[in-house]
Image 1 (cartoon, rainbow over the protein chains, first blue to last red):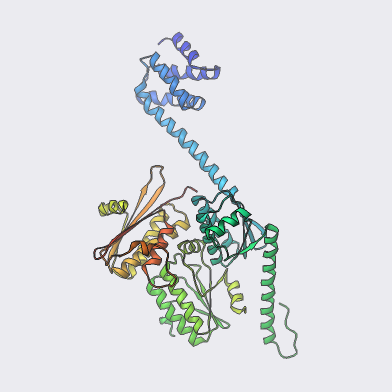
Image 2: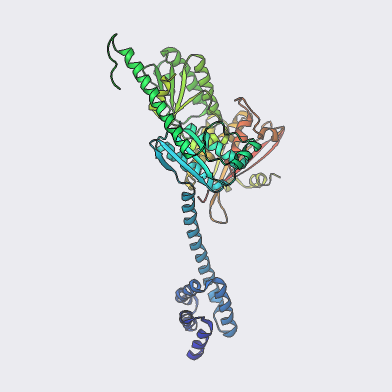
Length: 251
Length: 120
Length: 150
């Protein structure tokens, strides 16, 4: 194939100047006469560029044109290379998707410290298995490492809770309680309340609050109560240690 | 109880017994632990035992069952049982298997455990 | 029915990464530790490692208590998308279970040393579960757990 034919072909294939250039470069190397590994290595970059620019479908169509037009096109040599590059492209896309999924997971269930020793978990979206598991694991790790005393779980952002999701939540609550923390559930909408009772899902093992404000109030009240109890215990102990008439030490 | 009969070394704090479990709990061990604790509750006249399971990586149905049994027995002897330090993966596994630890007060850590021991 | 159990049982022992014979009480802990190690090496999350170890522990104990001897075989495979998946099968020639369905439903209220707690519990920890049992012949239980992408 001579230079003129090559240029004309490149012009025909490219839908704009940028693409024309890429095709020109590609065709030049393809018809340089190299074979085997050498051909594949030198073609790797221009072919990759074309793939990025055109996408698999268009590239496929255009290559078909080239093969029809120029029988001497080294199709056999190139096939493995094309497959390899497409595979890499797919892999790169999958990586992006994974990163986005991770981000989504974080955003969909951030764990926020709203008060000292009180964590808030606002659940958003549906509680489908894999994601829900990841959320439960994160919540438990965080509750354990921060020695949280209370965990408020807000389900306002969960559109539907069926038996499976209800079961999952109950398991999560049980697990939190095994860490020695209390759970306050809030954000159940009327429709969901209706469904839960009809399905027989029983959330009575946890405290329930009307809304976030109510939940926070309840949490603080419980913390105050615990503090009060401890003071009483401490005073009770020290008064049994002091002599009669003495003042108990300040704890 | 002599030292060599003990499966888990225990520590006396005021009128309770701290039991830090730092070994892998297999069936035989947990049964021996049960016997050891009941003997110690009797000997030392403690009002509570605190099981610290921070180092325990797997608690399955039989272990849970035996520990719950132990708590029930302790209760009959006038002794309260507190468990603390359940690790997050263990907590999740127990909850998802549907296993309930019965007869225990659950504490976040030792400080909380001691508070629970003396609470009404 | 019980397709995967039969598939696994038909494989030679060499196809498995771990084979633990259950004959003494200590073997339950050995099975648990080995399963835990394999899951850790395969990059499973801490929570999933615990679940796999607990499931294997339950299976090993069932063998020891009801059949006295048996074995547990575990292997790690790679799925088509490249993620690791752990398969475990527990076999014994014990008395067998008459009503598997009944044993699997969570119908217990007391903490008896019954087969029920273990089996129905395991089912909720794993992604796939199969059990085959015949009275007088024996029991085979298998489960699968894959590593999550999240």
